[in-house]
Structure formats: structure tokens, C-alpha cells
Image (tube, rainbow, N blue to C red; front, side):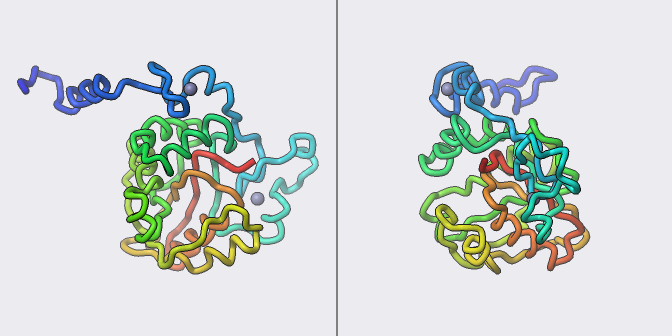
Amino acid sequence: MQRLPGVSISLYLEEIAAWLWPPRCAACDALGETPFCSGCAETLVPTPAGCPLCGAPADEASLPLLRPRRCLHCRERAPPFSAALAPYLHGGALSEGIHRLKYEGREELARPLAVLFEACAPPSAEVLVPLPLHPSRLRERGFDQASLLAQEAGRRFKLPVERLLIRLRPTRPQVGLDRPARERNVQHAFASRGRVLGRRICLIDDVMTTGATAAAATEALLRAGAARVEVRTLARAP
Ligand SMILES: [Zn+2]
Ligand SMILES: [Zn+2]
């Protein structure tokens, strides 16, 4: 390929990619709009204000009454992370997009979906860390969606991505488990590796429900001396 002065190869590559893979809706594949077509975008529900620690949406009517505004769970026992933010509630086109990314092998959706992270405040962190799958699940799936999302979030937030966590054992899916069972399921499931000491870290994952998995991962990082851990997910369970 002949280079024109002042035009970088990456720009060419991006143009070629746009031609090969034109923008499509992440939920219904409608051409031309990304991350979602206008019909699908209407199903997005921005996460309402809620608990400043775990991000659990609060009933709006009760917001002024909550002092401090921490949710019941965080008042009983604060989570180890400093904040957990997600731009939208899990549901509608967003859950469809995440489902396609995770279970239908649609790796290319990580890029358009990661655009949604911009609807949250940028993390006050120096490094992004994806919540890892266990190697056995990674082999099954062939790719790690949190890793793909972290790469794309890193491009947007201009932060490096480092795999500072490993999953020590495969855990059964959290779906259908109550909060205590979720906590037991992921307890001691993570260990840190690499340079963690004194660093401000932002964990990246697709969906947060009770925050049990993010809490277990955060504890592993704090044990290794991380200064602060916060969490960003694409979606938050309502
Ligand atoms: Zn659509
Ligand atoms: Zn909370």
C-alpha cells in the first residue's frame, strides 16, 4: 500500500475495516447505526441514581431520605471497591448485545458496546483490569469478553490494560443464586499477579448484579497492595 504523506497506516486500516464491516446495530444488525439503531436505542434505560458505593439503583422517591445514601447492603457491610458504575440497566437491546458478544461468538461487538462506557464518568485509575474467565471456560468460549471490552475501554479512556488477575477455579454461573450463595461461589476464586502494589485499578466486566464477583476480585487486588479499586460494567442488573 502506498502511503500518502500525513496519512497513517492505521487510518487506512480503519477505513478498510469500516468498508469490510460497516457499522451495524449490536442488537439487531440493522445497517448504518452503532452501537444501536434508533429502535433498539429506545430500549436503553440509563442507570438511575443510587448507592454511591455499589451503584445499586435506588427508588427515586426514597433518595432524599437515605442518609447516607448507601444502600442497605453497603450500610451493613461496605464492598471492598470504592465505586461501581454502569451506564445502563441490564435489559432490552443492551442485554441482547451482551448475549451476542458472550454466547454467540460476536467478538466484533466489543468495540461498539464499549462506546457505552463513555456514558459514565471516566475511572480515576491508572490501569484497567478485565475480570478474567477461568482457563477452562476460556477454552470453551474461545475468547474473553471482559478482556475485549477492557481493550476497547482502554482505547477510549487512554489507559493501559493489564491482566493483573487470574481465576483460580471455575465457578458455577451466578445466575439463579441469591446474594450469600453468590458470595460463597466466588470466594477466593481470584488471585493477583504482576505489579499491583500502590496502583489505582479499574476492573472491567460486562454486567454487575450483586457485585459479589467484583468484590472477590477486588479483595485479591487489595491483598496484593492495590491503592484503590473501582469497577465499570456495561450494564447493571435492575
Ligand atoms: Zn437495532
Ligand atoms: Zn450499595
